[in-house]
Amino acid sequence: MADAIQFYEPKERYGFLSNFSLHSIVIDGVTWPTVEHYYQSSKFLAADIIARIHHAATPEQAFKVSRQYSKQVRPDWNNIKETVMMRGLRCKFHQHHPLAHWLVATETQPIVEHSFSDAYWGDGGDGHGKNRLGQLLMALRDELKNKHPYKLIRYVDAAQLPTQFGVFTMHGFIQSDNNVEHLALTYGKLDVTKPALIRLHSECLTGDALYSLRCDCGFQLQKSLETIVSHGSGALLYLRQEGRGIGLLNKIRAYHLQDKGADTVEANERLGFAADMREYHFCEGMLHYLEIDKVKLMTNNPRKVQALCIAGINVVERVPLQEGHNIHNENYLETKSRKLRHMFSKEDDFSLS
Ligand SMILES: Nc1nc(O)c(N)c(N[C@@H]2O[C@H](COP(=O)(O)O)[C@@H](O)[C@H]2O)n1
Ligand SMILES: [Zn+2]
Image 1 (tube, helix red, strand yellow):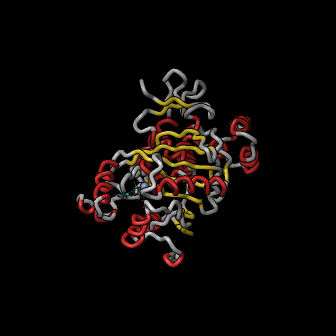
Image 2 (cartoon, rainbow, N blue to C red):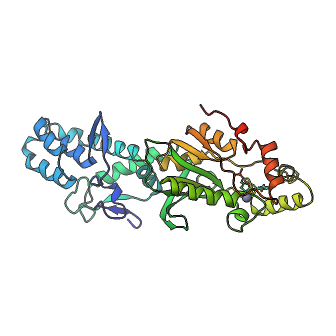
């Protein structure tokens, strides 16, 4: 098969697909170090054998211990092993969101466990094997890809992004309903038990990259990255929503109208757009990938707070982000406050509880 994904060793590119990958799973309240520990233990009924495999130091050890008791495998094992395997896989990919998104990102590529020693779960090395593990993984992929939130975005790839503030990891996504590319920059180790410090930053080329004083975006971007680094961890979702969703060239048209006296809302409306055309539903998919479900959100924009609440994200705190006010953007910011309800003072704030 030309474009098949072949996996075997956990350390290889698609190693996350291996049952030996170091991703623990919880099943019926019991934590298993890997799927392999769970699968091998499930072959037996004797508690002492199960315990020996459960506490094996590595998945390789779990496999070896299991082989020592091959004569004591439960008599119905062949009838239940596929159900056991699928249960272990479902737990692994549901309990480790990035793995599920990586699996869905393989799209329609065939998945093959390239194992010379296993012609049942693997391909037997030369393709004569049944590849049942690959088949189950493809079946699980089909289950996930049509489910929320996997339908919202497609994870593409990630890379290191050294910046003047610190080294971030840059994660690339494609929004499923319009093919727009978006980024998430993460810093440090996100503790899933605590609210993550995050920023939803809408792309503003003029502010973010051209040092514009007409708005506060570039100042907010810098402050957000600095704050995340000094906090020790966090995420900035960089959303390709230039011009409050109308695009760069229409933003220039809007600026031209503002040069002639319109405010930022009037300008959008004279061009035939709503005051704010942005959507945020896909952010749920990005945050799901990052395993973030409760946040301290750096923003002055009530619509961003509302969007995350609608997406089921627990916004435990709004962190004001009032940066870069100057004579060139004071009318713009005043209009955002008056017409778009941006919160620039403590009185504007509201209880999120
Ligand atoms: N349409 C439009 N008209 C203007 O006058 C603008 N300054 C912008 N800027 C865009 O607004 C977004 C940032 O606003 P928030 O603070 O996130 O609400 C960003 O998309 C800029 O390009 N747009
Ligand atoms: Zn801007």
